[in-house]
Image (tube, rainbow, N blue to C red; front, side, top):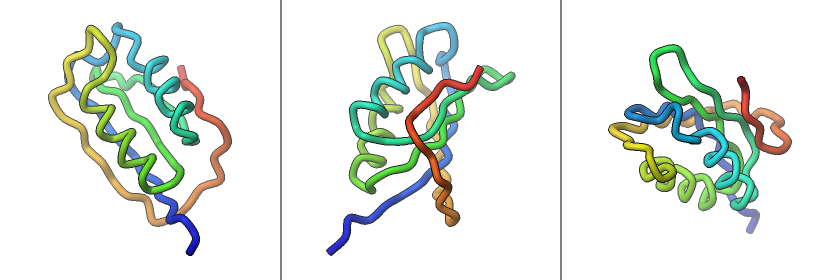
Length: 94
């Protein structure tokens, strides 16, 4: 049986900018074999699109709730995407 893939768009709220959140998220995603991107938003949140094996995506969502040292996450919104995009690697978008 083939492993199930999942792609999500997440938005993380709280004290998540100016604490290395994007670099941390990239490192976590890379260690899990995920693809996608992460960026800061004008309202102080961080958005990430994450794609990969279902179990790895679920693990990444759990990690987003914790964040790096110095972060304080108050909320993580997750939207499952019906359309699978071709994402290669995981990058920070300025």
